[in-house]
Length: 414
Image (cartoon, rainbow, N blue to C red; front, top):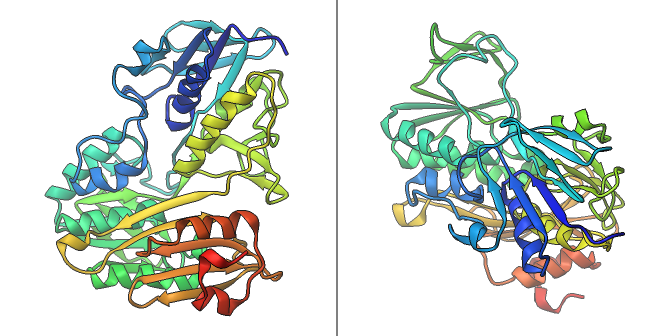
């Protein structure tokens, strides 16, 4: 593999920006172009649904300081959309008429909020949450609203519910699942999140489908599949994210069954010198022996760091376990709150749950354990002393007993 002279990174979110910065920090002295649709300089997404939406911050966590990109001779084209990739010509075209040749190409185009394909789903006034501008608009709306309606009970939906209640709005959450987050943590742990929000006054309408968004010229509520109508000042659609793979697909790159771009263990596509990272990367993960596509903050950052080495001839496999964190409600403002970290990748219909601590009191660690008694995932809720031990259990798939997990010294296991 010849030494590259120019590296182009498409997507200026955390994954792409980290890749560009890490390439330079590893000593590469050629051209680096980082282009992305967001008009702001690269930032991290987690604070948007947490500190920014709560009003504890007006800015996100920036990937690097404001002057970094210029000081490190990285050409940052913000507010620029890549419109076509020509693999044979090694060329990226953008919506400003730019043509950018590359020796190595990193695709990090991220995700976009899913929409509801129902009547009224395109009405003005519907909110989604993905960008800094989205978060600032939504915070302003939460502050002024009396009634907030959230469609979706995943991570964004539950964090937004906590923020809206903190701002004093009445909150109703509608979702087809029987419990919030049940599809990612299972019923037992999901029950803790259900109770937390119920204690803060959130009204749940679970097991309900949305038949239509209501309103004449702007969204004013939803009609449920039962025919009942719910009204609100703010309607937030939080039904997940779709990987933005259109650019890659149009270029001829193969897509995997999970909707992501097919990459190998080292994050390479089948096209020469083209890589995909972050939300769009469907990686064959050696730790799990199957394809994995992860939309979390930590994966975006660490895949950006990892791919920077592989661009120069290595093809080291990316082995990190998925990691996620959430903060819901603020204990300093009264009432119960959950802060947690979640490591690993369980198979919910296979793995059993073992709980250490007080589930009802929101002070516990939950483990997902395989039939071979290996820890596939761990979630520490309001417990912060065992992070390293939990990471080791998950990464090394150490065989343990349920009693060891419930009451043993976790640092001594394995």
